[in-house]
Amino acid sequence: MSAGFPLSKADLDNTLGREVGAVWGALAAISTRNVWLNDSSHSDGNLLTPLGYSGSEITTLRAAVTDLNKLWQISHAAATQSPANDFFFNAKLLGGINWYG
Image (cartoon, rainbow, N blue to C red):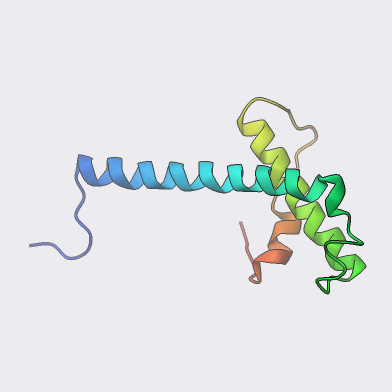
């Protein structure tokens, strides 16, 4: 008997399937959120400001979604990136934690 999670081909297949699906789903959600934020009826004055967001918070929120949407585009060969970019620079500010690495 071993301690911890078992490791077999089926376990690895299931784990990788969930992880890939989570990345795919998260990037798809960001792409959808980007479209939603950029909809003309969702201008900051009638969407984000009434919710209580300050100007600097709106800038951070939009920058994070824009950066991560670019990552979605790159992952689907719809865009390239040069120079290198930390796509999580602004997203880290929304995450509520310090992310390193």
